[in-house]
Image (cartoon, rainbow, N blue to C red; front, top):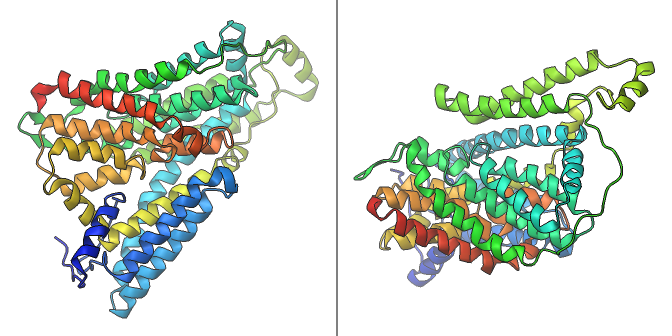
Length: 482
């Protein structure tokens, strides 16, 4: 338990703070002696800064101000305010300790995403997605068929790969196939975000939040939340995707992509890079499952696979005089040596810095005491079902990772069915807004100007139908677990 010194505050004003803070649960860290500043001017100022920053993120479509800039600035100011208050009490070491904890959390996220983005860029540079685009178009598939194929692939790949990586892969295909058809790109990106989040909800490896719940080894009267428990969520997760997908597909243009005549060959090493990417995912899973290491260690090990393969491509490059012959024959494509650091440089740094800002902002709000208020507001007197449904709605505003961390920190006494419900709602609730999940945020960067916050928001009621359907189906199918 943390030893807090509570500052006095008017009751009515504190109630308003509790209500607002319920929208801002986050991962927090505080040492002994940390103070409750939720009703202090520092707390109110931090809330205001975070709110303004998020409003600017939402308005990116109109202001053209990249989303990372306001949250990175807000993060710095919030922690400076906290440090100033604590320094007056001679407890600034607590703030430094908390910041380092948040930076460690961000470092794991940053490095994990950086490896995934590097592989995506490497496959893109080797023309993997261009070849896939040509193959899909030559199959004679229209935009609606492509809409369903990319969504189906996103749903079934995300339980093995994480939902973020899956969304990035499928979005690259959509952008390659969609051309100038912005409606198809927007609706397909929405479909991919919903499908990837839904697919990640029924597998321990599909999303960081499911992994967190599985790792916690929670015991309930109905049994432990073990590996196989999550597969009770398969049909509810499927309904979460299929309901909005069926409606969105009706708005897809009944057209076909422009016919392609050019021949596109994979560049040298493309297939082996795909295999290395799958091996990297397997390494991350194995390191965590069998050795107890953070998945990011496996991902970075997989980056080394790509580095060594890039070295091989450089040393074994075909001499210049043979290049044209091999290219014309279609055996290898352009054998220009692969440079991995170009792919690292081309990562979506705006997205990576955005996550830094969010992690530090929410971490600061948690350090101020808003995590405690949010937990009390949700589980102190509410029915667990209502609370868990609300958790899913909150995850549409703040990323589901800090939301689930907040629930796991409080560790409410719930049945197996309720733990699966909160896993489901936190996983798929982030689909309601584009900023509610890592997949949505990443796709806003990847398809900048075509998949936007307000473009997604327009279809939020349709996505909400799938959210409701998944909850009702879980309550009905798995009622024995409650």
